[in-house]
Length: 311
Image (cartoon, rainbow, N blue to C red; front, side):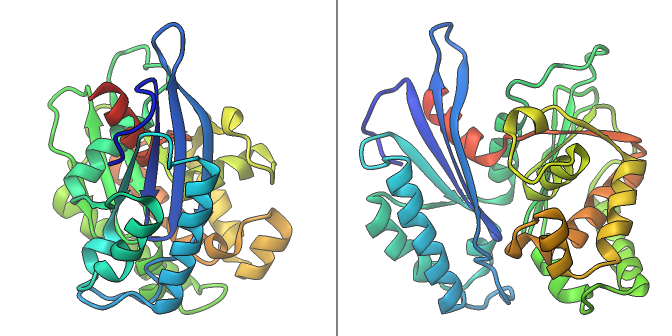
């Protein structure tokens, strides 16, 4: 963590398995945190990575190039920041292949956080600026990532501990979805596997409003809005029904990754794993017995910045 700069602003950097995301948060005159800059870049750091394996050199190179861009764009040499890394660097047997050159670029260490720590930071950022539900039931925050998925209750009755599951869109795509587009059987096998995994660690129908963060949820939000250019304000707080999400899953699994890019503007390193992400969201909606979820444009990077601003 870089300790320099004004305590009234901070940058959070999320070095994810598929996406690197960075945000600057400031404390406004009223004392409330405000996101003033927010950028995400698809990197696929965990490309072809198996537990205990090594990161591909090409994936490391993409990641380091992205770090250089983000460090420059967010002026991290002069601002306090916290850089946290997640499942990809937890999985690899040689995390220093990435963290050593990353430290040279950033001028500070990259923290490799565990799953529970990730879930807590995700939830801390996710609910910023979301209106609480009228019944005060709290939230269940779901972060579907590249190699892991975090689920964290916030302010719910009969609360339970945050959960991190080693399943994510990159790993699931590489394991189950050989076809482009995937077959009905491949989708079914993926959904069965996800349902089996979540049933081992999550309560079946807990109280709380379901909130989805990260690339799958926000991309789905943009599709629902009919937009191809990122609109943070429109996506944040958007409610999406399970029926609409299932409809998009059907449409996305009927076409290949190139068509997802050309017709809907989904980026190249998101387009191929997007069907797996939709399967994850829809399976969780089924498991939690929910008909709707709320999209949050925030997440881990915001939580990391808030941890500096609020201690």
